[in-house]
Length: 200
Image (cartoon, rainbow, N blue to C red):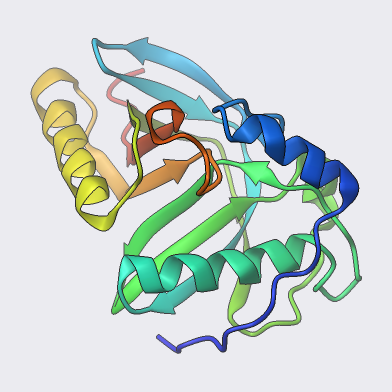
């Protein structure tokens, strides 16, 4: 895994600045990843996510070191640092997972641009297509530190094994819906694991 060079974040538009204000209170105005709830349990659920395009960056280092660097690169890709100079709006959630020697962060590409996703110009950025998939998701609040993330992912893996016919296929990931400055108690985070269909 390479260590991407640090770069400056492209400026926010006036619309994005206004949209960020409700985000401090856990209100999400951005486009969300599309899914349908298939099964519900006491504190987690099984979801069917629609096919989508995602953009990724893998960064060496600790979670805290990787988080800011990866976010800026993905933000800049959506805001015009791509082969077409195409500007797209932010989406939620941001997906984070462990990678060899570091962490991988991913954004969903907005639906209106999925069929014509521009190629990255930064070699650290990759775009990938995914078909419809099943995921288990466990929601938690607070600031998503590395310790908190791994704890909730472990809890979800245990619940999948004990309470369902599904089995982990890929992950775990953490989905983060909020900006860093949002009130911690109101933050929406989720431990996410791709699972088998379990006979569905």
